Image 1 (cartoon, rainbow, N blue to C red):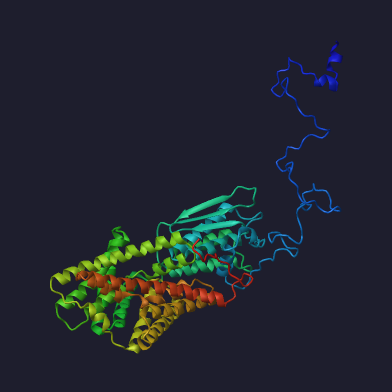
Image 2: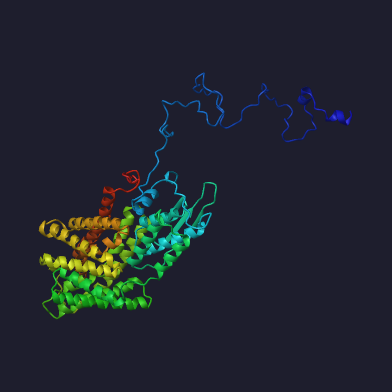
Length: 554
């Protein structure tokens, strides 16, 4: 046989003859019978209908399946599932343009990524848009200032989301915890995501800086105000460099006046006012000294709580006709971490449980530091013969006008300690006076329980604070935090500690539990007031604010 004949294809009969010299692993072994198909090869796709399974046949007029856009054979328009897109399409989400950016961003954060409206094409930098890593870095720096200033985790995420969308970055996911900020941006489903993070290592209370950051975010989200990336960095650097609006001596004086006003609320007179103010100012200076030596905040609170307690014990030892308990109670008002407590409960109510747990743990450490300092002084005072009466909490004189003025002074000095802007001090002072008036009317005149009265008064504080913040397009913290100062459970905390120092642990625990109930009532009331204001006003998401629905604990 020639080579040409050898290259010719063999016939079917030749192919059916098995060559014993073939050693391919795909060859059919000799003696194995293989069924012959009739022309078309057998279907081996995993989507093929198995033999013996009968399916409902489509109408005779229906087209044969095969196109990706043809309807399945088992589809029926009458029995169609609600999972299919309706004929009218999915309703678009429209955001109200004149609503505050906090509401608009919070609404979109609660949406799935696929349902969020695309950002408007805005170029705030060079042609081609700003660099994604720089936008993410600016976003993290803004979020760091807000979180370090005491802002809630939900509002921090809303601000970070607003900054990203203002520069045209869609599909961004910010994440906020107590000490860590992160944000991820994925341009599309086929592109790699870009993720950046930043750690918050130092916290400081400066509501003036907080308000400046809110104004920057508001300008970035405003369609009529064009702020380039470089301009945003410049303004952020100015915010960081700005000094506090009040000097150190003003803060110390405000701390003393706050303690004096708090002592008047619990029945103190002029001498008690002066004594409580001196004790609080001395404690504040000692705390600043400890901070300069690098001691943790736990020890700073412990040292700051000792001078007011020592002055109260000294009055008791000298048998002076002065309510020493009012002096100690006034000194505690300046130390109770009401701001951190409200922020912690707010994060828990809005679903940020990790951040809420960390904030509440911080509050517990501060409270334990205060307890340690006061208990040390009270223990030695009782040992040396100091006559401190725990039942004195029941003897509070009713002086409505004086107490309302004292509550307003307390809110005013609290606002100074929080480094608020001077334009917000008047409003928060009035808000504090309203809070104490409502509490006094319900608890003293109406004989309602102190917990319920505190919750209602705190709810009004949150409601008015949220309305004022919406009017000025700013954060609600400067209008609410200082206003809850008169409601803080200073007297319940002191008398609980005094009972424990006198070995009356059961009474002490009951009083401390009462203080914890009042603190939770304040925090929940402030948050509830804020939520009520959002429910009654336009919020920018087709009339609804989405939230998780879990009514059975799973």
